[in-house]
Length: 166
Ligand code: S3P
Image 1 (cartoon, helix red, strand yellow):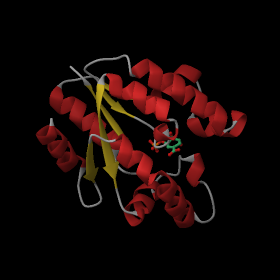
Image 2: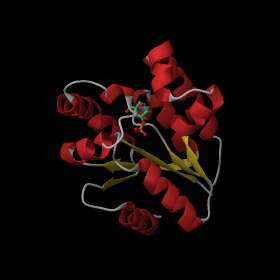
Image 3: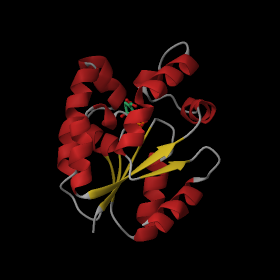
Image 4: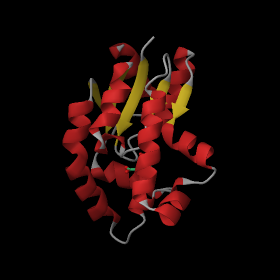
């Protein structure tokens, strides 16, 4: 069976929805960020601060190529996976791409609970989210087979929508 690949900005619920969806469908769950952390034995914030964003993006590229060869998996990706169009080409070979979206307000609320995102570790988070989102919105849209606005939804409701789409 084809993979189901969740893409979208930070705080749109890729990981929580992916985990639920995998449980509901009885399929393996893979979180590309978690896997990058495990394979490199360091957290993403450590990777950014020790080696820089470009190093992380290279690891992310290698991970997209690797998980793109899987089958039957539910794959949650990092928010920047769309920055390299090759990543999407690789993930699409064997997967449906589902894009999760949310409003700036909701993203700020969700990502503010635990600040583990180096890109949002700045004084003006609202400005950062707004500008990053504007620069990426078309990338998420163009990569997607299906788009779900998660702003007013629980991960359970998003999971139901995905199952209805399949
Ligand atoms: C990033 C999103 C993060 C993580 C890294 C960079 C991004 O993943 O990959 O901090 O560029 O949007 P989440 O979307 O799971 O927070």
